[in-house]
Length: 121
Image 1 (cartoon, rainbow, N blue to C red):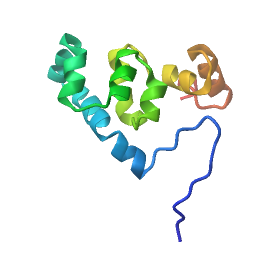
Image 2: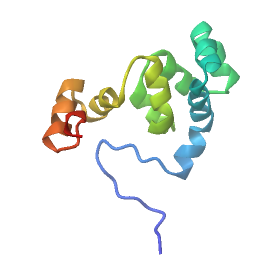
Image 3: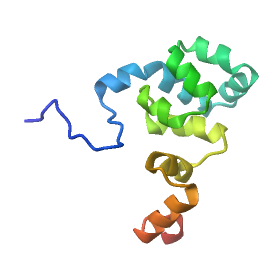
């Protein structure tokens, strides 16, 4: 039987049903970045685009401040936030560095040391 509790992992933002609900509008907006029209509309007026999707003030502030970690705390799924990060010119190694308190280079070196980096297949 599955438990409704989860193990606490320091520094980890647990993405579960309540977080998915909290971040629904944010994730829906990030999904819209799959299309050139969505990306262009966002770039033309970021605040209005956030309002179009009904983002909370905290989510909107995190978007404007380019704060990926705050977006995760506000219900952002890393899979959808990757679309936003792409608009900023960031990749998953950049995000991994942010999540672990490392530079991108330090995070990439860590992945390489574990046999999981881009240089290891």
